[in-house]
Length: 188
Image (tube, rainbow, N blue to C red; front, side):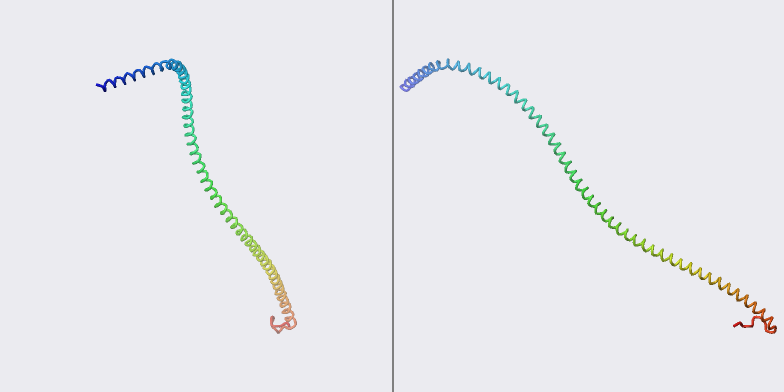
C-alpha cells in the first residue's frame, strides 16, 4: 500500500501543479483571448485576401489555360509554317536545279545555233560561189552559143556564097569552055 499512497501523493502534487499552472494559464488565456480575437480578425482578413488571391489565381489559371491553348495553336501554325517553309525550300531547290538545267540547255542551244549559223553562212557562201560559177558558166555558154551561132551564120553565108560562086564559076566555065562538064573545074 505504500506504493499507492506515494503514487497518490505524487498524483495530487501533479494535480496541484497542474492547477497552479492552469491558474497561471488562465491569466494568460485572457490575454490569449484578446490575441485570438485579433487572430480571428486577421484570419478573416487573410481569408478574404485568400479568397481574392484564389479568384486572381483562378483568373491567372484561366489565362494560363487560354495561353496554353493559344500556344498550342501557335505551335501548330508554327509547325505548319515550318513544313510549308521546308516545302518551299525543296521547291526552290528543285526549281533552281530546273533553271540550271534549262540554262545549260539554252547555252547548248545557243552554241548549237552559233555552229548552225556558221554552217549556214558557209553554205550561203558556197551557194553564192556555185551561183557565181553557174552564172559565169551560163554566160560563157551563152557567149559560146552566140559565137557558134555567129560562126554557123557565117558558115551558112560562106556556103551560100561558095555555092553562088560555084554556080557563077560553073556558068563562066560553061561559057568559056563548053566541053568541060560543070562542077569539075577547080578554082584554086
